[in-house]
Amino acid sequence: MTVTFDALTIDWFGLATIRLEGQTGAVVYVDPGPEAYDVLSGYEARDGDLILVSHDHHYDPESIRRVANEDALLVVHDSTDANEIDRVDERPEELPFDVERVSTDESFVLGPLDLFTTPAYNDSDGPHTDENGIPYHPEGQGCGFGVTLDGTTAFWPGDTDVLPVHADVPVDILFPPIGGTFTMDRHEAAALAARLEPDLVLPVHYDTFEAIETDAESFVVDVATSGVPVVLDRDET
Picture 1 (cartoon, rainbow, N blue to C red):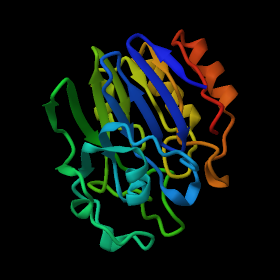
Picture 2: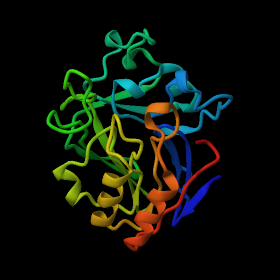
Picture 3: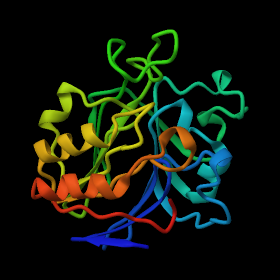
Picture 4: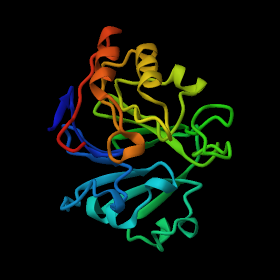
């Protein structure tokens, strides 16, 4: 299923892998892969102009090669370190693309695109920690991305809890993670959607594996009850 909203065409492949295409032809991919979850199985478009990688867990060189065109810009969070990822052995800078490292709370213009980043992490005092109380995503180890394409701002918060910074994010399309365990759950994401009041919500980061299985239909009901438009892209869940 492909979702069309204003000037954008949107595809969700599974986990946090999202493709955005504007009417002017610019193509953005968010967190392609990783290969281990087969979200891009058989996909070899290589049409991406801008590839965004939010943190280590979503960095995968082979998936990036599947989606990026030869002139692509790869934007990667500062903390992404291939030496700390068992399944990869190539640093982003070793890939055949222009690479830009970003931290949180940045904003800049990339040709026809406006891009901003936000913090993305699990609170050490919150529910999204391991058996030792360590956050699955420590502060400073990832980011969320907002990108404005043809006048429409799409926002992927990243693998994160709901954070105070999210209260002021400008957003037309919200891609909240709803799977829980490692991120906000469907209840927290629905409350965030109600607070931000975007023009469209398309949930991601759920049902790809057991730990993030959730009731997406109930999420839709909760968001719709708050008066916010919401849609499920079910072909690739």
